[in-house]
Image (cartoon, rainbow, N blue to C red; front, side, top):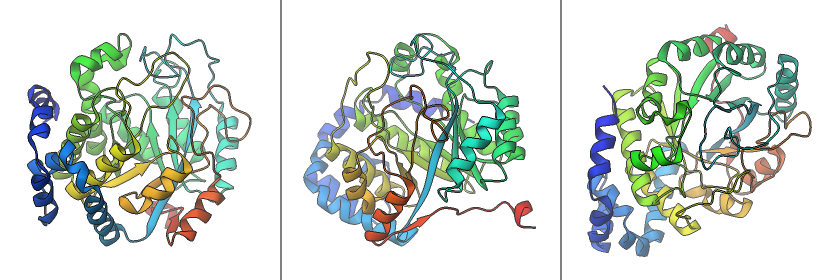
Amino acid sequence: MSFLPEALRLHREPLEERMAAATGHDALRALERERVGEDGFLALLSPAAGQHLEAMAGRARDLTLRRFGRTVSLFTPLYVSNHCANHCRYCGFAAPNSIPRSRLTMDEVRAEGEAIAATGLRQLLLLTGESPARAGVDYLEDCVRTLRPLFPSMAVEVFPMATDDYKRLAAAGVDGLTVFQETYDPDLYAELHPAGPKRDYAWRLDTPMRGAEAGLRVVNIGALLGLTGWRREIFITGLHAAWLMKRYPGVDVAVSLPRMRPHAGAFQPASPVSDRELVQAMTALRIFLPRLSITISTRETPSFRDNILPLGVTRMSAGVSTAVGGHAKAGETGQFEISDPRSVDEVCAMLKKRGYQPVFKDWEPLEASA
């Protein structure tokens, strides 16, 4: 069982032609349905649906309130290593980039965790570059055990692992996994990943499945918007999320919508995504998959994050540093530049002003409360 055959089938499909043929009436018909199928989702992503963005926003707002209420879960990333074996053309951590490389000691990991915990946050995303030789499973397991007393909920965004390795991390205290396919186009994927273990498209594509089979509670996927046409990428992302939901009904499937940001290196987005287009992508996803968790990160500006909050957002990052050791001390080169530098307190104040409840913790391991 794998999503790979479906991804390859969709790669051969003339999706852009189907979207170009969709009409505004097709989008309206999709909005009128209680449950939207694949064709309706495609219509909502079409250029013609842009004229109905206000109606899409209204439907997305209603579905989000019905399912999630006026709550937003907050988390922050903790970068523990920026060593990387990959040659991704678009990433600041890529091996060919001449940046300072470092890996935190367990004392430094603890200091970072204590600095983050002091803000009130209890949900953490642990990140590294993809270098199993420098920051492998043993190291990550030590990090998780060090941080476990401070954070009841921890996710990882690291190199793709085997199911048994995810089981090890789950036993240590990890309950979530974030892995971006970057692009679902296998030809473009090969071009953008010329060397390193990340070059294996199929292994990466099935990573969320392996995490779900290891018993992780949350699996978060996404494409890096700006590498190629966003409509195709969001369509396949949505179908990938739906595939995971069907096969793992006990797993909270989430999607992030990262737009490319400046970073170390010269790569520039081939297909920039406008604010209006990102709103269309997010509202279409919400209408297609009402139970989907949707994350908007600090890649986006404060004003944009604030304004799209009601349209489907369920998770936001706050108090972010993308540099190794950037919470307890001045960090080095980050993976990318953030656009929203607000502290946790400032993000919480914004949410409360808009009538939302910031959620610092929504999960407690049973053994911790026994």
